Image (cartoon, rainbow, N blue to C red; front, side, top):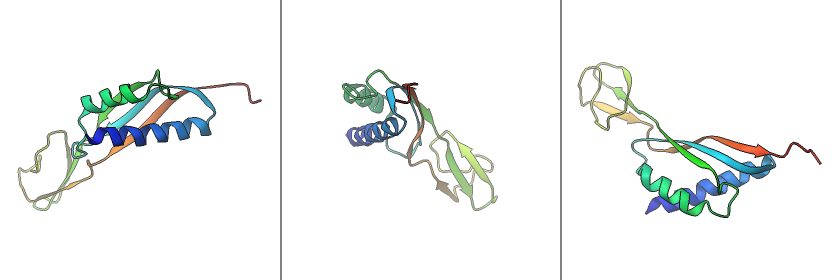
Length: 119
C-alpha cells in the first residue's frame, strides 16, 4: 500500500510547515491528486485519518481535489485537459498523444491556527 509512504511524507511536510509558521494546530489539508499518480483517494483518506493521530494535524480535514490529465495531440497540435483517463485527444479523437503531468500528488494548501502572541 503505497498510500502509507505518501501519508508519512505528507505528515512530515505538514509538521515542517507548521513549525515554520509556529502553528498550534493544522485544521485543513488540501491536496490535488493526478489521475496517473496511482493514489486511490479513499485509501489516502483512510490512511491519513489513521496516521494523523498525535500529530499537529490530528483534527485536520483532508480535502482531495483532482488534477486533470494534460493531453498533447500530435495530430491536431492542441493541448487539452481531461478528467477521463483515456489516452486520446478529447478534441479530435486521435490516439497520437502524449500525457503530460497528472502523475503527482500536490500539497496545495494548509490551513493552520497560529498563536498570535509573538513571544
